[in-house]
Amino acid sequence: MTAYLISHNKGARSDIFIEDPELTLTFENGWAVFRDRLSLERGSVVLAIPAEEGVSIQRVDEDQDAEPAPQKE
Image 1 (cartoon, rainbow, N blue to C red):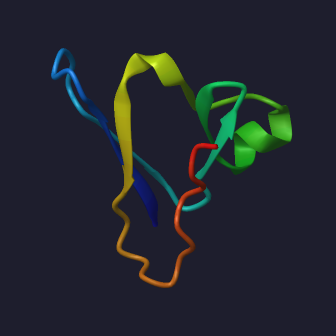
Image 2 (image 1 turned 135 degrees about the vertical axis):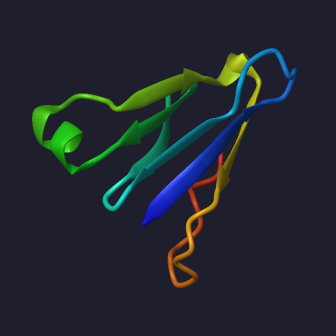
């Protein structure tokens, strides 16, 4: 199952753990955008975090054959 751990670098907030079998992460116009199959079909978003929020996003699922998350350009 695809899973990500989102940590606030400044330690001001709690970490967020998000997982879904069809979870995707893209970087769009300065935002980290998480979507699942249903949100893709509806044209919506599961979670979006602005780049200036100062977070670290780490893929933590157990699927070793999965491709790494896209890197910020």
